[in-house]
Amino acid sequence: MRVGERTSPGFFALGPVEKGWAGSITMYLTNTLAIRPFTVEGDSVRMVVASREGDVRFVGRLTDQGRSMEGIVEYHGGARLPMTATRRSIPAAPR
Image 1 (cartoon, one colour):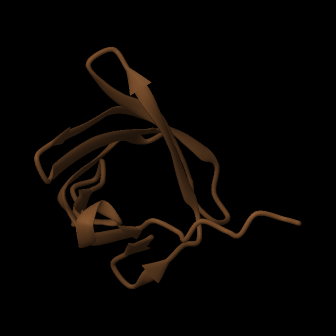
Image 2 (cartoon, rainbow, N blue to C red; image 1 turned 30 degrees about the horizontal axis):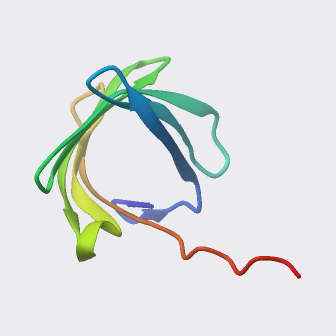
């Protein structure tokens, strides 16, 4: 994941919940945060991440056949930064 000029090797864990998706996001050197609604309509993606300081919102789109998403993340204080998240390659199965 890259937010503004900062890169983080963190990860998303998502699963189906009611009519959408929910899960968590764990960024390098920070706590795990809840992703409340995460919705996908066509190639449009929206999510809200609950943080102690307030909700962080992301609006973007899926790219590279769904392997990446890019858009704008808006923090609780109003700061808006570009964000890109890329799906990791699936590691080879151990022998």
